[in-house]
Length: 504
Ligand code: NAP
Image (cartoon, rainbow, N blue to C red; front, side):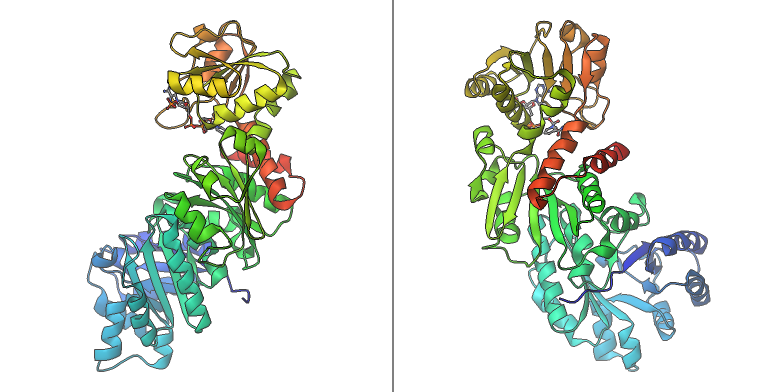
């Protein structure tokens, strides 16, 4: 596959010509192409206004009229207006039905040069249409210069037909834009141009996104380094639901940039992990040809993914959770880098943990990795969980004690770890796994929650005169282990640490 020109198109949707001008001048600073959404305009605007604006932008411009049925604002009926524009020099984006009208029924059909400027588009905001192939066939028949298909991804596997369309169009020499919208489709936006898409749309800023899942133009350029992505670029990513809050893309992309590695790390929102692993990941069954080399796995898939692997590291097997996958030729290998990293920040502070009395609050995946590591260090651990059955089972598995979380006192403990989501930004932000009264007397409090970096648990611990450690360092260190597993190189930990600090 030859290297494609990478183009970012920044769409602008504004109600007045003054707003349109202001926003599109900003868009021209970030994008290679500016898309003017004519259907957003409500004020009387002339063709001359738009032509003057296009000239001022000094960038290729796409004039788009999107009907309400196709997700547009349909503020004014500009379709006749589009015909006027079309006679000038702009690219115009119109829907398949309008294109077919021009092709089959117009008494004055476009000239060859004019067809070259037409983007023939189809949008489906509900999912992948069953008649996708027929829609594509209808488009291909027309002499439109560029074809565009945008569908809603209800799960990540809805990206598969979009990558396949890119290949099909590329093989037959047609220009195409194929996008899976929504958070599950982000891979098509970041990888699309390198895999043959004429352009990728990048929002002016998060609030200005004109379609679901649109990444900002600045993120495409600076975080994902889209201009450097090519078919040989190694692809890694974080698999979870949701993943849009994750800062792993910041950490790993900074690492690849810092180590000068041709790789990109994507957020991969996955609902059905088994189907994803089969159709997009496993080299022996995947339906798309992408240079996927490794994955981070986060909630809720760390356990379910075990069944999809060919080989599992002994620690991940004992813990019962995988957070890292390495694609090694045609094998999938699973590891748990949480277990390798969770105690490092503590040992740097207090040294060896042999004989230390440790309280672990929570009985989920992180608690499991922590208990595995504490057992290996020779520490004496106690599980505090709200669910007695789960807590007892986990404690038994790792030779620990179990105690009720309600009214617990941690005064006898050297280390108290929060391994629950309490304190995490959002719904749990104002909650803590333990109060200052409960923590008084404990030596060190460690919160695995890293977002925000300052949690209520850490505040309570400080109020109880405990030393404290937040979860960000563990996040960076487990990411560094992943980097080494994927690349065989030592990780640029400082660059990763700085990227994590910057984002919180
Ligand atoms: P998980 O598997 O979902 O387990 C969460 C545990 O917290 C469960 O035992 C759950 O109890 C318990 N819990 C939830 N709400 C609770 C509440 N209101 N009161 C008491 N217990 C409660 O999640 P995980 O993967 O272990 O992750 C736990 C936390 O660690 C998350 O915030 C995650 O972000 C963080 N983490 C951080 C890192 C890092 O690198 N810093 C790495 C991994 C995880 P039930 O079983 O009864 O629901």
